[in-house]
Length: 399
Ligand SMILES: Cc1ncc(COP(=O)(O)O)c(C=O)c1O
Image (tube, rainbow, N blue to C red; front, side, top):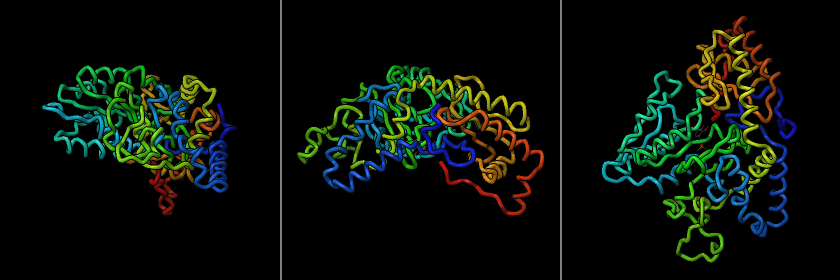
C-alpha cells in the first residue's frame, strides 16, 4: 500500500510484528531534528516543547480515541505502571487483577507487582491449548472481586485477536476497570477505544507503526478518568502553561499528557513523527482489509503447500490479528534456515514460526516465495543438516 515510503531491507522481511522497517520520513525527521539541535541547541526547545502533544491527533486516529485521550511517552511497561499507580484502587473484597496466561511477560510482571502492593492477587485466564484463549474462560474470570483487568488485543504468539468491545463491556458490568495492551494491533487494524469505552490502553510504536527500535510507547486514558491525579507524577506531565514556573506544586496537564514524567527523547519522537506521516490519508479500515487479504493468502498457501505445519492463528477474521503463526517441531531450525536464505521471520519458543505480512509493505509474491522456500526445506531436510553442522541461530533477541 505504501511500500515506496519505506527503506526496505534486502531479502524478504516478515518480522514487522517485532520491529517495523524504517520509513524514509522517519529518517528525514530525525535528520531535521538533529540539525535543529546542532544549530540551536537549547533554543530548539521552543519547537520541541510540545512535540509529543503535537503527535496526538495522528495517534488518536490509529486507536479510535480523542486526541487528548492519548500521548506518546514511556514504554508499554512504564505506561502500565503509571496507569496502574493511578487506576488500581483495591477496596474490600475487590482486589483481583485479571490478565491471561498467554500475555507478554512484562505485562504480568507489572500487574503482579501492583496486585501484591494492593493486597490482591493476579488471576490468569488459562489457555486450553497453550496457544489461544476461549471466550468462556475470559468471561468466567470477570467476577465481582475484580478491580482491574488487562487483556491483549492480539496475542503475541498465536496472533489471536480478542473481542475488545465484548470484554470491555463484560468487565465493566462486573465492576472492573478494563484496559488493553494493543502492541500487536496498533497500525495493523482499526480500534475504537473511545467508543467501546475502554478505561485505558497501552501500546508500542515500534511494530506496525514503524517508529524504530525502542520508539516511545503510547497510552490511552478514557476522558472519564481525566480528573484523577497521576500516581507517578513528573514535571513533564505538568500543565504546559505553567511548567516552567517551576513551582513546588504539581498542576497536572488536562488529559493523557499528564502521564508523561520526565523530559522526552526528541530524536525518538522525531522518528515517530515521520512514521505517523506514512499513515496520513490512509483509512485504518483499508489497512485492516489489506492485512486480512495478505493473511488469508498466506493461510491458503500454507494449507496447500505446508500440510505438516499447523496454523495456530484463528481463521475467522474477527479473531485474527496481523500475523500468522505456524507450529512445527522444527520451527527453530526452519526459522534459522530462512534467515540464511535472506528471509527475516520470527521464532517463538518452543515451536512457533511467526510470519507477519505487513499491509503497508509486504507483497503476495513475497509470501509465495517464502512458502516455496519452506516447502523446499521440509522436502530436503536442509534446515536440519545445518543444525548438525552447528549453524543454527536462535534469533532470540527480538521482541
Ligand atoms: C504484547 C506486548 N507487550 C509488551 C511488550 C514490550 O513492552 P515494552 O515496550 O515495555 O518493552 C511487547 C514487546 O514485543 C509486546 O509484544
